[in-house]
Amino acid sequence: MNDDRAGQTISRRARRRLLTPLMMGTALCLGVLPAVLPVPQAAAQAARTHSFSIASQPLNAALRALADQTGVQIAYATSVAAGTIAPAVSGTMSTEDALARLLSGSGLRYSFTNANTVTILEAGATTDIGNVAADGSTVLDTIDVLGGGGGFSPDTPYETAGSSTYISGEQIERFRGTSTGDILSGTPGVLNGDNRNGAALDVNIRGMQGQGRSPVSVDGAIQETTVYRGYSGVVGRSYVDPDLIGSVAIEKGPSSAADGAGVIGGIIRMSTITVDDILLPDRTFGVRLKGGFNTNNSSVPPVGTWGGLSGAGNYPNDSVPTSFGGPDGMDRPGFLEPTGGSGSIAAGYRSDYVDLVAAYARRRHGNYHAGTRGDAIPKPEIGPQYGWIIVNGERVWGPLDDRSTVTFPGLSRYRAGEEVLNTSQDNASILLKGTIRLPHDQQIDLGFMRYESTYGEIMPSQVLWNPGGGAYQAWLNSIELDTYTAKYKWDPADNDLIKLNVGLWMVDSNLILPYQWYFTDQTPPPELANWFGSKGRRWGVNIDNTSFFETAWGDVSLNYGGSYTYEIIRPGDGTELDGRRGNRRELSLFTAGQWKPTDWLTLDASLRYSDFTSKDTR
View 1: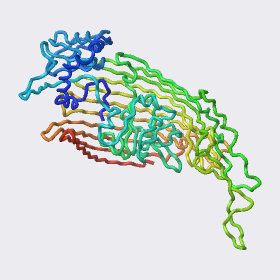
View 2: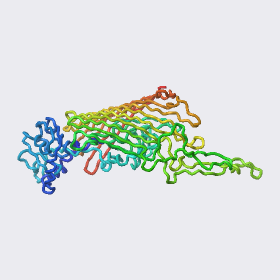
View 3: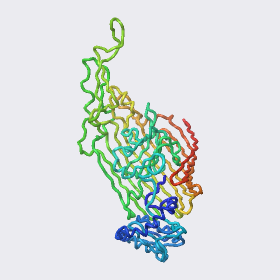
């Protein structure tokens, strides 16, 4: 998957493929479009002003910078710009003025062929770039097309083999919901486990979930945190705020990528916001503000507060309850009464060599209230109690005449409109990231994200097994998560054998998970407040390179590399479970190839070797 953002140079391979029939068509169209599209559109684009900051550098690089800052496409033969140094261009001016300054003294001329395309030619040359072959066709020189960009887009799932899904920043904003997992709503084959219970991502892809089967990667870092769930075992959770996510790419099934070691169900790759998500196209600095509020939730009640239906059990017929559940939790707020909300601020700066992003997000709401419609609303069922009785002198199992049993069928234990306990969250997130563009088509990306959350959670067994079938407000859990990422990219435009990516990441977590008790007739002692807590550190490195080959039997591309991950876990400060100590490491080597013998056939193959070791260090 190519994660280059729109607006950068199109990929080397795509550029070459455009040289034959597609680029020929483009070149021919350049001479025709002025007669088809209204000339004022091209004039308007040329006259549009931008704030430029382009240093003196080789003309190829200078034209790339101009394309990035204006969004226009620039078409020219590679040979005409070779060996030419462009002067510096700085200040606010029109696109045409900036282009004229870059080309001053080079002997080259330019022509806007439509609203978003400009052609650069040698003085006296025509728009038919190239020579005429014996059969009358036009043979083109190598042509660079700058601007437009590539990368993973909403159309990629329909253009590539395999099953995948792309969720854009616009979709995240539109369907953000109140829980983090709501951004995945409507994605075929994908759901978030415990979406209202835990304030995190525990993604299920086609029935595969947890323990690295369907991991979540945030800017290349796998931040899965192991959370104890009592008799249900453990779950693997990832924590992130939707306001800091710029896009999501979901690859379903086993992955042949560098970060796909151990993946069975699929992998969710989340990319945090960049300057393109913050800045207007012609600006170098900007600030983005987001905010919203929600209703239908209430402040968290004191620990030990009972809620939900209660009273299940056996009773004498004259003592069967007539109502089930206490008076608390039924004070649902008004329709437009703001009881929770979220907000974020993000600032971005862009220059020729550096991009910077800083963001802060806050999200808070209490326990939500159950709906008032649907078949899931529980209704108590009262029936006879069964026991040993005497029938015709024989002892048999049957209904007792003087006793009744109250049961609550189904999974829900809350009345219509009642406050659903342990569903609150209070989150704060910080994001700092930067991009450094180096000479010779190199790039370094650095990032740091901190996530802090205090949230409600109740183990499923607690709801069903507590006396009377009721629920209670437990202590709140908390998580502190620090994510560090560093990535290096080298993609020289003149070398088809090198497209190198190196990623180094580390995740530190501190989870406080209190003990959950079965009886709440007294407040539990303070030493239970971090009974199941844990601290973890996971770090890893991913390296891969892609090489392209042209052969007599078709085009071939090879992607190969490896990854290494090391993780340690130990008890949290103050916890009583001293035995939860261990470490694990995973080494993976892979190669994936693609052969395209014809335009209508593509063959893919991949191979992975993995070595995994885990150790109990009690």
